[in-house]
Length: 410
Image (cartoon, rainbow, N blue to C red; front, top):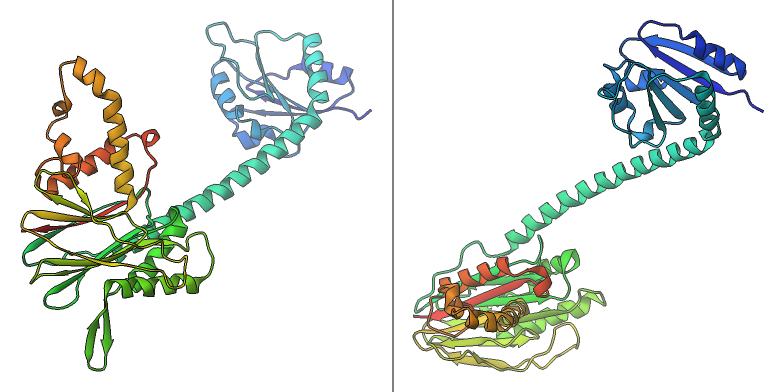
């Protein structure tokens, strides 16, 4: 049988001859070190022993326990002994499984019994120590990678924001409004508003399937593809809405199969002189026409998700806006948010009625939140939607990116 090796650390004066006699009784190899103030590294020593005895004072006991509390420091069991401690000075039990604390007198027989258990546990403790150290190193590696990924997400978010228009052009006879609320730091939604020539404005709204980084990467392609002007030797040519979407569809088909290959998109041209909007849509919700206090009207036109077929049928629709009318071009995130609000309102309707308060108790936001429920400036509608999105719990709706472009005829 291997002779036990014991590391004895004595803090303060005293040779502890009783302890040394006990160690000789069991034919243990031992080393004795004495110090007034030890660091954890000095206290634990360099070479793992079968067991370690640390004799300390009542004054230093809490500090020593704090030093030795971390189990990853222990390649062998440590017996921390404070014989002068009383009930008032004794420290609470330590959570480290490799640290045993004894307060009060320790008999030789009790010491030998504890040493026997500690020697038996040494191999197990060494294995646990190695596993904990490996786990600590692996955790440090993962934390470093997470920090790197977070920095990359910050950069991706900044790049994506720069792809969006920084300034909405002024439009004669109408006002343009935009609302963009990503589900996460980066978004699969995209919009663009730009001037085509002296009298026409191009408007693009798109939603790449999926969420997160794969969908967000598609926005760079959308920025390039959803352009409505082609430079020619003679000058330029304004592309028709369906032609713009067909070009985007071709780019998606050329990319090949991938999880984020498909895109729902709408491209529109607004004519300032006639207040006419012409658009083609591929998979996005139908545009909504808001007129006075009436119900919103869906402007139906044919068009499937882009990236599915080589030459999809994309209908070009048109609408001449009357003063006071607003056309909303949006992604399906807005529908999901308003549907969640309708479900919540229906659930609470009975309680609100019994309590003597109707929906008006929510304030002015009640008529602003439902499209077309009452005349309201677009700023108030968008503000109410933004507030609703912040108040709606994640468990109440399928959180999605929300993008809206509103054309409000003056």
